[in-house]
Length: 302
Image: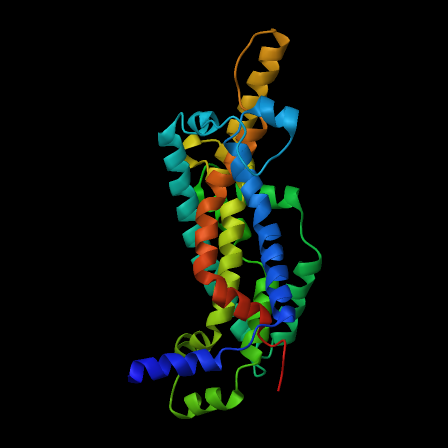
């Protein structure tokens, strides 16, 4: 009886049907579908025959369903798995080191008692506006540091990003000053205040900047092109770039020799997107709530 009464009360509390609310839901559903439609087109094209795609254009459903493109990419699974491992190591270590170093510097720049605060803020902002360029970076990394065919060449050049340092500085400056003062009175040092107070209170920012680092390292391939020649150290993105270049070269050679060789074209590029973007999308799903919270933190005051 009590359960039936609870059901009746829940039904009574339901809001009546509203045309305006229904239109809002329909509109949001349409927007959501438009957001996922590009990925659906990518997956469909990767499973389609290139000739049919060239003749009929893109479609949400595979045309002449085939997995030949994925068979072509997975023709050397050992190299692909090795590149996945290199990318995972680079992404994990680079993200952890980048977040830690950026947070430490942002924490120092947020302290008003730091005498050289203005000098270092100027240096960080200056490097946001002007950078040394590709050639000086290449000379320093490969010549001065000697990081040729070294996995550190994929990590160190992009570990420190001035914009992320200023984001951490803004976050740490917004922390309640009373909490830090009470921690000092209780005898906490700077390291303990940083790791036990400032960092836990900045979880949305940590997740946001951490996700940015993950996406940057995961999608990076230019450092590998500049500093890596050993195939065992090829990251995933650079390996996929090499596969596409080889396929284009073989296709051009086949056309020049007027031979019939079946090699994937557009479907290969779309399959590359699926193979490379899968893990990053799963990470974004787990960090999405912190990512949105970090982006909107400080947007409304009161």
